[in-house]
Every structure is written in structure tokens, then in C-alpha cells.
Image (tube, rainbow, N blue to C red; front, side, top):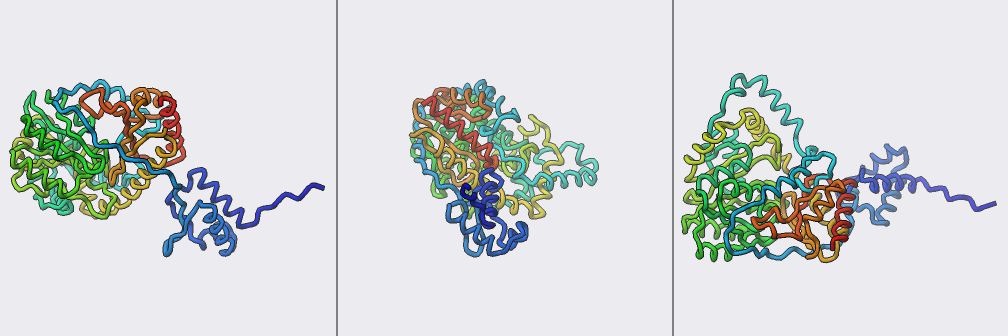
Length: 478
């Protein structure tokens, strides 16, 4: 007779089922496991059996025990990559010609069959969609004529009141009349550029810069002057000051908090210096604060606007990255340019849709926003860590990754031989979208070995498999 097969003990059977759930991605890194009592009831085993199962999983490194909290799926230890160095763009201003390339890249971002690592928006399951729909449904019953009439600039007084209250969290104290409601932050930026610059003028921007900003500059016939940017601290102010000494600049446009695509966060002392530097020269500062609420640290960064004493800072933001991209609800506090921005808003779009801003105003008033933000930030922080770990594990040697302290994006520097446009084409064929580096500069030959990855989607086996495939494609190009 052959040897009898080993029959797993009861605790081993419980442990094996949990291990399978972890391997399948049903339980992900950072997830809290059921309490010992809950699992004993669910599995119909004793408390001591569950304790043995948890001890076994802990001994093999799959879970960890946190005092006074419980048992959690352990994060895999992955190597930590170096960050990209400070960018070194050309020192001359140039017209922008990237719209054709952006259009080709954006086609892939709209395909639902593709794993979306290119688009910078949060997954719907991370957003309070049902709550917002309830607010909209209630408004359609209660709003009467308000919902079908023009909401002329400055727009929704209820939302402007809530923005004024929230401005205290930004480090300032703005009034409702300081705000104008817009169709997302994109329109806010566009209106600000129109208000402060004329065709042929130069706008100083971070390098790399968000391609939407570059497209706005291109559409208005402006020139972009790219300023070096640190992946940790943002725009290099010494370089900006030197550029201001050399040439006339109509305005400076920055994303101080968790910039797109780098994810940098400008320290408070530098924000003060930037505001003072531009105020002394009479150069307007357009501040894009789109990601300010998505900080991973305990406190929200103060806006540059909070240091503004003369109305020289035009603050732009929206709820597209935190609540509802499709609502297209943004705002601008344009300081001394308020009257001009309001006139431009009316001449371009007459008004903003009435009901979405009202629904968001109600959500803010009822206190749901801060609770939602705490949850969203936890998810995004976990997803950024998982994505950075996946890049470290699967991408070729020599890859560098920025380490953002907020937002939902990763700026990845690949080995010099990897052409990100070629990688983009191969990734699309494999069912994966990415944002290649050249679309983040006015000069199409810049950042050819860089890509931006979105961490807005939950880290699932499908996403991890896509990152693994992307790494293999990058290695083949290297």
C-alpha cells in the first residue's frame, strides 16, 4: 500500500481559502480581514482554529497583525526606485503644436475594453455617485424653473457660499463674490489665460506640464516657456527668476499641489516666495489647484492664493478629480481680474449648467465631502503605492519613479533607449493605455523616455497584469 495522502488540518483548510482569495485579488494588500469571531462563525470552526490559521498566514508573510486593530493583508515588499532628476527644458519660448499627438493618444483612453492607465480620473467606484444622483433627483423635483434657466456668471450662489467656507481650509478667507463657477477647471484656466495674455505672449509653465494646459496655450496662439521642475518640490524658482530677468512673460501658470504629470508639491516657503516674486514684477500667477484636496499627509497644502495681498493670483479648481468628472463643475477666484474673467465667461459660454453645481453645493453643505475625501485619499494612496511597487518589480533596470505625496499620478522615467511613443503603440495593441512623455511638453522631442501612469483605478489582478505586460514591452524596447 502507498503512503496515505496528507489530509489538511482544519486550520490549514481555512488558511488555504484565505490564501486563494489573496492570490485572486479578492483580498488585496491593506484589506482588513474578518475578526477572529466573525471568521469562526462564517467558517463554522472554533476561535482557536481561526487563530491557528491567522498565525500560519502571518508566518508565511501573507498577513500582518496590527495591535488594537486586527489582521490585514500584507503589502509585498518591493524595491524602491530612485526619482527622476530635475527637468532641464530649453530656455527659449516656443509655440505649442501637440494637439495632433494628444488626439491620437486620447482615442485609446476612451475605449472601455482597454486597461486605463493613461487617463487621469478616479474610478467610478471610488466616487459618491449614488449620493450625488439622489441630490440631482431631488433637485429636479424641487428646482422649478431654476434648472432650465441660464445660471449667468458668477453662477450658483449656493456653491460659491460653500467654496468660501472651504477656502478656510486652503489657508485663506475668500468671500462668495470672489468666485465664478465654470465648466470644470479647464474652462477656468482658459478664461484666465484670455484675461491676462494676448496672441503671441509668453506663458511660463512647469516642465513637464499637463497637456491640457499646453493645448489651451496652443489654441490661444500663445508661446510656452518651460521652467525646470523638481519631482519633489515643483517649479525651480531660481530658474523662473532668471527667465523673468531675460524676457517679458505675460503670466506664470503653476500646479503647486501634486502637479500633473510629475506629482510634485511646492513647499510653503517657496509658495510665499513665488507670490512675492511675481507681485513685485506685476506678473499674474494662475494657480491650478485641481489636486489640492488629494493630499496624503495630515494637512492640506496652503494655496498660493492664501499669500496673495494684491489680487495678483488667479486660483482655479474643480470637483472633477474628487466627486464627478462628468458634472464639469469648476471655479475660479480671479482676484483683480474678476470683472474681465466674468465678462469672458459670459461671452464664451453664457452660463454653466444649473443643477450639477447645486447638487455639489448640497453635498458640501451636508458634510459628506470631507468624509468622502478621507476615504478617497486612503484608496488613492494605496493605489499609488501599489502602482509604484508594480513598476519597481516589472519594469527594466534603470527605471526611475517620482514619489508623489498626493494626487493619483506616477511620472516614470524609463531607460534612455525606450521610446515612449513606440511603447504607447505596443501597449495599445496589448489592450493598455498610457500617456507618453512627449505630450507633456511644447517640444515634441522632449521626455521621449518618460510615461505618465494613472493610479485612479483600484489595484486589481487585471491592473497588475497590465503593469507586468507594460514592463515586458519596455524591456523589449530597452
